[in-house]
Image 1 (cartoon, rainbow, N blue to C red):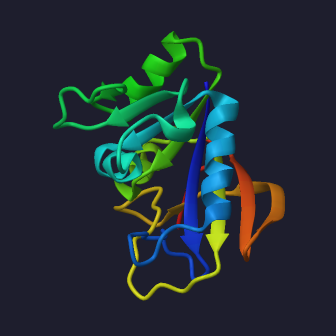
Image 2 (cartoon, rainbow, N blue to C red):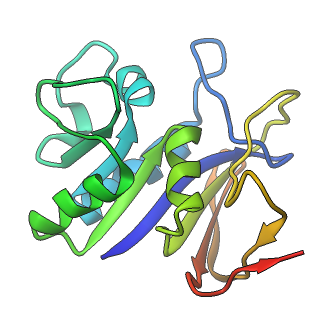
Length: 175
């Protein structure tokens, strides 16, 4: 199964933190919705899912398989709860999906990256600088790095730039 990590980054490379006073850019949200519809699913952390849900209802994600990865939540109406990244991927594979979109929460992203479960990354770089932010990590404990191959680069409008990279899962080097 092909796994695609989707994230919005700030212009200075942080994992973009959004909230009521700093909402995500519409162009980035539209890009995410298009990718989710194309693959028919997305995997998200519980806190990010709760933030996405807002006032309830399926919104633009009606008919899309949503998997929430949470060690604490037992049941969330309308979605599947998985305890781990592997369990989430196994569920989507069982449902017949060829690709999985990993969409939210730095902890979820870092968990998939750290376990070497990502084939592609999509970064939408927002035109903002953020003083304190979270980072996407492939390994918290070493100076490992992976080579990636640029597959696509395009402006989405509103100053947002879309970057898509392939990751070679076998290529891992420590420095």
